[in-house]
Length: 342
Image (tube, rainbow, N blue to C red; front, side, top):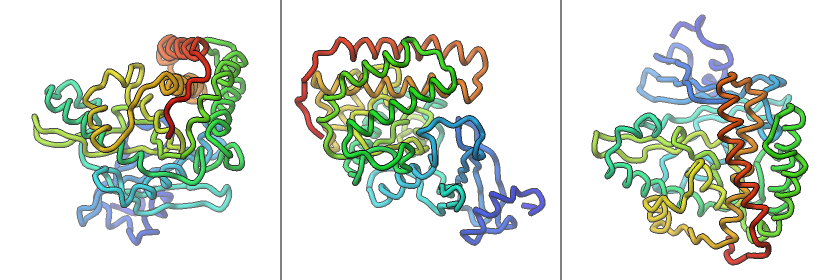
């Protein structure tokens, strides 16, 4: 490509791995991201990379947990780089800045395939069942990766928490504080939400080992590839929202606005690869807590992301309704049911 038409920031990222603009035959923005910017870079030698960069500092669109968000994605791919049977990108380069001290860019390999949600309506029943089983197996393998501390790798709320309850409390407190800062209307008052979640906190003490959690495994972050009739899982991508915590939290985005217990194919694959998907009362209560957290993020981010009036109305109605239902489920759950440990 002509160096004059090349973004200097992207050129600097590529120069760190000895790639000049003249080595690039394609550099195109990708849609689908709601926070970071994405570019596909194709080199003359055939290599295909993804370049990811965060929004400018002080852009006014950041929630507190999103501080240094790319550090989480770099941590995720580093943690799983030697894990067999899991199709994830490989890191080519991690760029860090001195001021502020954050991960300011990633270069990674591109996984083949198309986003699941784009292919979903054309999948045969056999392809869908096989892909869900493959996904279950991949997630179970990912959940074998253990960390040394709970929470987000960037530590956006200060020093690492001593336990999972403390980490999750900091996570929910932060997004509730963001709701106040951005003037977000929730289906329940902020302090009521805080109290409902805190009252169920003892169930989080069951979680004693920090496990790798992607927390954003909706269909847009899952890729499928193959000939028609034989498509299967080819990529698990966009791990920027990962944290170290309870593997049960993974089931929220895997069955967004639905119930993972109904996904027999996924659960069969998860169990076949060694995952524990025993749904006791306490596991279900933890799952409701994690639904509350994700729904809070979805509701709060709509304001700084400046959603359209139509998007905002849908989010308040649909996501807000699900948050209210999960809060009611948490509030009505019997206390003290701790039967399974991770």
